[in-house]
Length: 374
Ligand SMILES: Cc1ncc(COP(=O)(O)O)c(C=O)c1O
Ligand SMILES: [Zn+2]
Image (cartoon, rainbow, N blue to C red):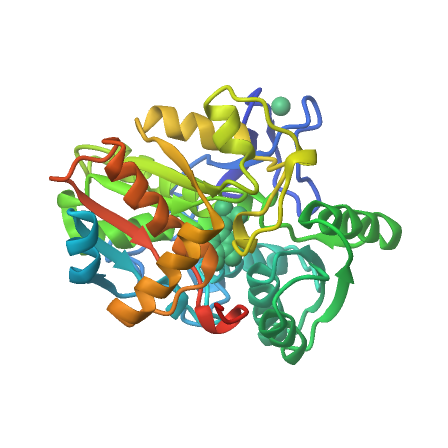
């Protein structure tokens, strides 16, 4: 018997786990993993946390891994001088393919492999596609990756060198998703969507467990995350809830998120401001450029429950921060990651985050994988 079920994020209907079920049959909402029993799995202290973490695998040795996770945390003094608050960054770009996506891919691909799946389709602004391509390569799976035609050349090159078949789609990031879904339907393949697969968040949640290992019950009061679909944000929330339910932490930090002025569906919905995809503008923050994020309601629920806040940043602000991080701290983040720092500065200025707070920000992806800043 499996140690988990799929559970609807909206109506709570539950389903037997399946590689092809990506939304609730009854209401169409995205699905989450719900653990039936932890006894069925061999829960041992993991290499990430030193304490057991429930994973949707029969045995933790089934995990397909390239050594993701265990990324370093550093304190940034020049950023502290600029924003006036203590700040830590967790260097997620040091994951095997250069972004935090490897955490989710590792667990998702392990689960799909255990179903006997050997061919996958995924759509991505670049990082998730590169990640899936790498893990598919090392586990002898075939990957089809759909990317926007405008995706940065280094990311496209990375996907190709891992041996995936690449499909470049003109138009928006959402057009890429539609093309991938049509390809899945027409070829009867498995859609390994990092946005819809409930397995992906089970990997990103390990970020929270590592933060606990690093800080114990003194986790920074405020955590700021760039959000497109919200896979790291929701993983962080799920991991923190697991830590709280198992009484390992006494309080949940505030989870804030940042989007850009160019693409801000979740920010707008959270603030009851009208916004639709016809208002999408070009942005250098490709990772947050998602017009219709399927897990939007879940992100807003976590925002409210963690008492977090959200903000948006302009193109100028995020590029300014990308350059500041590189030239003052030696951290070459990609523009999407710099949005989180630009947003942090705004949340401090607006008083949403207090100056006495300690703040944690993930540097989600590497500048080496994106177009150079002008
Ligand atoms: C570097 C980087 N940071 C953040 C994000 C946002 O992640 P999510 O869409 O899961 O919110 C992405 C997504 O592609 C990304 O590539
Ligand atoms: Zn439902």
